[in-house]
Length: 352
Image (cartoon, rainbow, N blue to C red; front, side, top):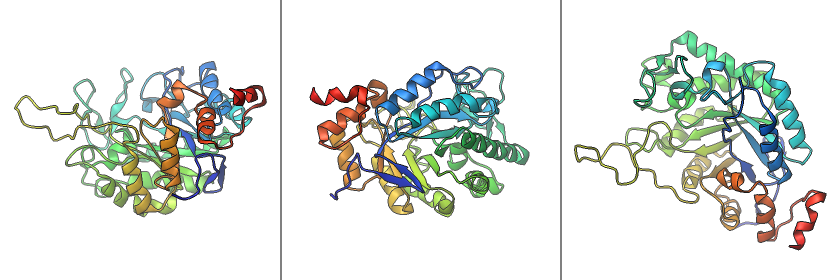
């Protein structure tokens, strides 16, 4: 183990981060027509007060029809900029850097009376409508929407941009052979739409670009971390960091599930445990040599320290742990004997 500490600084491109704790994007289902409200302010600023190094906002839809849920944030109108900008400015007061995740629901959208889009007309499950197979015009429109969303995010003052290409949403469904069965250029090169989105963003802005992917589909015919690395390698000059998750492309059955025929299903059951996605992050980090954020049910500070200390990942993301405790960083730093800035009104906690 080297001397890298959980609460030591690091960089994504030219973006200086004060520690290696990242808040994973978690949808709050609280927006109205894509607009922020007081809940979003309290939610994000409390984690900034708690000294999270990088706060990644929940996914903001690049189009109204691309929302996953009616309560999703949006970045598809100029009117969305003001509310987002106010929260970003408040987070900056406490030293946190802030990224916005932008995405499109694809075949996993849950808006009523809204046509779904996908690379291939395959529905997610019986509860979802069959999506429209996107034609070239649809694809070009989505690429434009991502570009416009990125420009709005920059206007709002975000420090970085995360492209949501995980969990079976639109870009993720292009990457997976399970959901992309096209015979055109976007099927022969499943990463082409992501490549063109990144190229457009690179041409128009200088913000660090993070890509979030599902490293494995948990399916025999799906992506593995090694296959995902092959897809992403040609895009390497276009992005600055990876945020590694898994699953969501197809619904994997519970552990030990068997089909009614008595035969095992093709899907691999997902065995979750603290840090269960870290091995996938390591594969991508070693293959692509990019700053890599990993996690998966992490809560224990000592485990987080071991992961960054041994350079398995460059930073760890927390989700549920930060929902339970916005001030996780304070407790973690004190338990590890590491220095962390504490806002003056909370300074007396060190004597507890």
